[in-house]
Length: 154
Image 1 (spheres, rainbow, N blue to C red):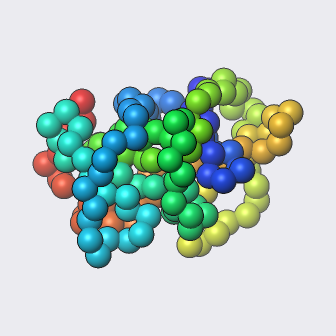
Image 2 (cartoon, helix red, strand yellow; image 1 turned 45 degrees about the vertical axis):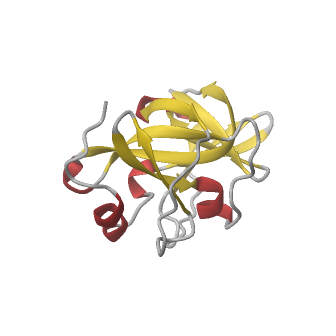
């Protein structure tokens, strides 16, 4: 299985590459006032208004830093009613992939109710990488408010 690796602070995280549509440079976002702080804003992606979640802010409560390698990862988000919708994920140091056998992905044995998107761990020679469970990134209310039902993925 191929994973896209990114950082939040000094910690590494992974997203299954099969869910990635495109990786785009950081762009100017339109702020959504009164949205949760980790919602960085929205932008026009190929004619569709797409919300962007700042993963560094969501995970560590610190906004992504404006590195040259800070990117917006466009993903297919399977939400309510099993409909795929586009979602942008801003992350730092989006520069590498990892091809990992399923047998090397292991459960941490821990569950954090307030962070259901934090999944299994990958062990490599540099330490641990935590997998992000994309389908648990947004609550049902956030899905309804942030992801319009008529949106189609490309």
